[in-house]
View 1 (cartoon, rainbow, N blue to C red):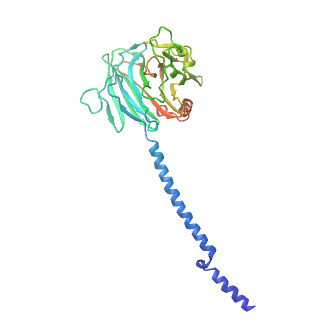
View 2 (cartoon, rainbow, N blue to C red):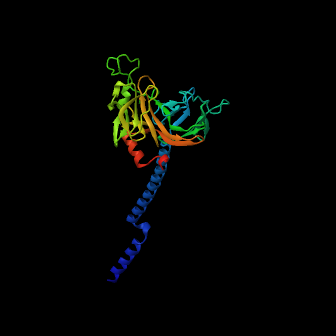
View 3 (cartoon, rainbow, N blue to C red):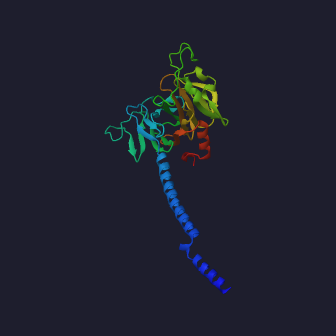
Length: 332
């Protein structure tokens, strides 16, 4: 009995020495492996975080040489070979009267000539004054998937301006993922005596919203029978200017959005307030427009409207939902 007790104590003493216990050594080895894997996972998280940051780089923008409308080249780092000409100002209008079309011709940044683009920490800006005394101030800040824009109109005239709006333009000519297919004349719905080319396929992918529903422009009153199609906001008086033909259809959200051919990308304009939406499908500019609305401006006064040019993955409806769920800075 005593001998058995001594053997038990000796065995127990041996078992309490961890370095002589095979099972314990196995646990230690496993713990070291887990610690090593934890370090690897931490490094992977850091690496993936850096990768996501690089993937979230802002849109690329630069002043467009030779532009007559304060043009900016806009492209997305994940959509190579596609450049949009965002024409920041083709004209300023007061109601149905403009102060000159294609007047805003700016020298490139750093030029001695004036007026010229200014660039500061990636933000592009300009000031332009029409002979009548109407001044435009504009800034464009590139962000991820969008260019945040701010327009200010100053009235240096002696009379109030009643209903000020501004003619923007986004051309798709150098963006093959969006540029419309040319409709053969034998299949065209344009009037037979029309001298326009038919790029109305664009209208099958261009949307505004009315009553909470998407409205495709080829489903409007004039549809693909009109090369210069325009729509006004609901309850607003119509604008009669230049070559535009207003549809009886209206919109009630200040957003116009174009889907790419494959439906994977959307280019769009959004403003806090808008006076007019339109598309030109009669030549190879194949462009769409949304006119920010400034309203009445008294002599010596000014008005500012903010907005965004979007170039983002997803469908137009996805972008609209995103804007509603996370309103742009202009609405905050």
